[in-house]
Image (cartoon, rainbow, N blue to C red; front, side, top):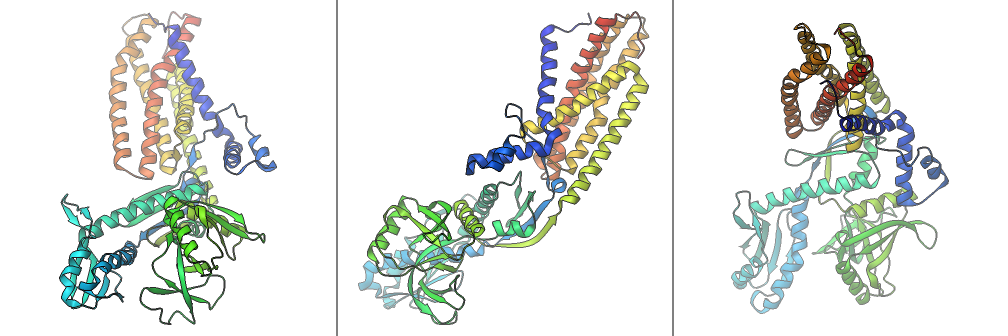
Length: 553
């Protein structure tokens, strides 16, 4: 019998209602977007009259999920950055010097005095005054090495230590360099993602390309220069003892020291100890604030380990200057007035409010382990994105209208049922995209346009099958029922193969290819649902009401 159980009807109509409700916010895109931004700002920074007004622009009991617009639709910035992985080698070897010194000191009667020598960027040179103790010195320094897993799975040492006359030369092993490159790139990806998330941008694309490159695409941001200001700064914060002042960068700093310029005053240079007391890696929080004179500043707080080292140093060096260094520039060099327990403090300097806010964001997100060299940068204006949206909208409407006309002329009333289902199909696609927070790009629009054409395939199979059954002198109810039953296998087979293709595209592709695969896959699911269940429900409801003796398809 041509009938559908009541619970099935309720389930089908309920699914349609939920899909339409989820898709509805996209019809009021700007209003809902303003509402979402206001709610997020209120949660993070508190209430203001402007935020409350924007939050009142959309009822809170309605869904507020939107289909995010990609870079090619919304405009934004595109960067391709190369991570300078070699920077990590020299930083790692510089940090090793205190450990080498400390391990050799107890053996001074064997190795003599220990002095740091000028070293290349990829090595650490240490001179001992008693070369006859070189074997013992090499043994002790090799004891600092740690095991590292190589790419082949074998366990190797991270350090290579050799003697050259009265000098010990320490370098990183090939296995450690490979492992360091991988760690550096992964850490850079995570820190870039955290920095971009901190400023509230929507659906950025941050992915690895090759062995040492990172692709960054951020929709909605003003320009590539603005994006570079957020992620291009390494934000390496250190607290270093001040040895004295220098007249220029060319002056001699002495072994174990370095000369860095002051940020506030031009022509001022500081001689600092290279080994920092505390680094930004031990920061747990940084917030923009104001100092006692009302000037923009940044409050910071260390973790327990950093707080202990910071407190011990300030207790032992009252009256001595202490430099706060950001990216090889001395922000300030205050004199320690008293013991600073608790591990918290304030960074002051010639900041604007925006600069102090950005600095706090960078410090909270963490320092990049290495510098970035930008190989490619593009700014896509919103007007170009609007042109893309308009072109995609026109293409979708043309395809949509052509399909509607074809179905109406070819199948009459049944074609109108299919057209209504097709409209619901598009709404369900946008409802699902909003539900999962997907990003729509131009290839995604192409997937929707393709879905519009594919969505009627199932109805064409069903209606043609009903025509064949009507020719066998069966009644209209039986013909409709057999038409759906016999077309079902062909519909499922055709759509399963296309869905598998969409899954493979999503798994193997990236960026635009994934966007196309997502809309194509969701479109297949919704088109099968509307063809098999929705159009059948419409036909059954019409048949129950009219009870025709004959039908024409």
